[in-house]
Length: 380
Image (cartoon, rainbow, N blue to C red; front, side):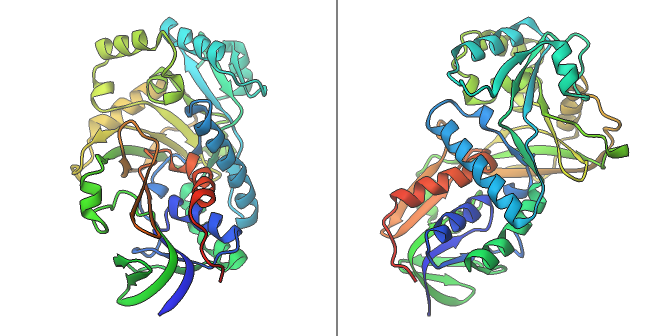
């Protein structure tokens, strides 16, 4: 048997974040991943680090901690990161009212947040449609990575810098602390973290069955690289996004906006659609997304959902080309009403799951918190 201080199951962003947090504290860390590389929700997203979506308090603080860690590891692991900021664009009076209420009631005094006029938006973004634009919310805190690049480069960085040991193509089939059965062999660890994402039926199925957790399917698209090195600038989103993120939930006028959307365009709430666009370092635009809830999802994507997304996108964004090069869907775990799910099925075993689609934004910060409160392992 091979012993380590910390065993982590899953090499998606949640597992990698916990591997980094443990390794920085001097622990000997081993990570098991059932696939040749992470292929789940961690690589099927916008690549947005999105503090603006988190309510002020613990969650925004967690997001800002994660943001700082992203900047550090991007430089060390040599993957691109763009501190581009974000714009929430308002074309209808009810959208603008929500933005005004948000700024008036959100105690952020670091200068990272302000309302812009249409003329100011035009100066900041070559992509924002300014015809009919009433104004926008500018936030300086958002950043973008290419998740396909970042998730591939983080394991070798962790291995080379901190000595983290990775075992890909190695499924964990049983846990009986301190023992882990992986790839037909027995390993032992003082602390075991299960970060297996939406594939949560394999380990502790009875625990998950009583958790109330569900799964969310999203549809997304990507363009080819834009011509002549054209850049999007800040990531963009429209009024639909105000109904999606919890940071806007306290705004008194939000119910009015939701009612109007449900009345005029019921297909948006039906499919959980809100529309955002980011750009990676290769120049590709990443566009999405939708949200379908349930434990089992149709493996076939709906073309009408993608068309709804694109039609709405054209109302607030312009680019040299929106020709779609790739489409896909992702599935992530969610516990309704919660921002994460942490459980202890055995002494020494911690399950971390259900970051509800905010894994890129919150994982590094959450891992720091988890490592601070978990019982300390012996150092290897």
